[in-house]
Length: 179
Image 1: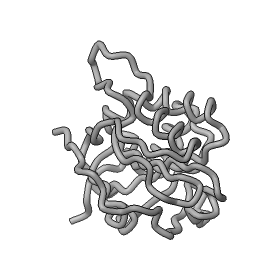
Image 2: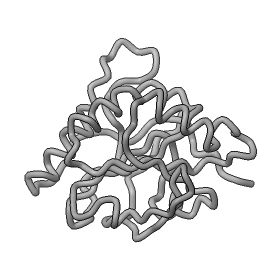
Image 3: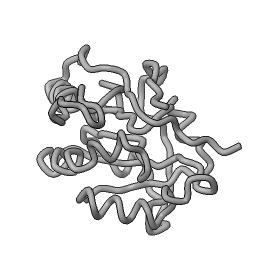
Image 4: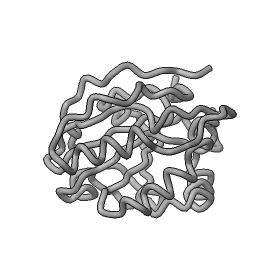
């Protein structure tokens, strides 16, 4: 059942570190390196993520000066397709050339207040939260074209140093919490 996320309580990117798909610990601060950053909670099995994953890859390639970071926080004991092998397959399939981090204890998802996949966070170069919400207005199996309009507009506002007031709350599969 789709979950719609409420607006986030955080106002800055949390100082966190997580292992990537190769087991190398990466910090969000080092990955963003003073650039605009897009951090999003993702997984391999969610139809909402699968619906946009190709366009996320294209937009990340187009907006290459932006630091893109995917995080999977799902319980892999009950959702093994969201384990490292599945995420590597997704990264290849979606042509994601950015870090995909593993939040196995789910602490980072809790720090962000993330509740679903996909759930996007756009941060300005000073780590101030500019936007938290959906990629665009499209939904799986809808007639709406996948454009990334909300995310694109939020990144543009971050680049201009202005506030973004558009967009919509994230909508997708709930994060699969450990019991």
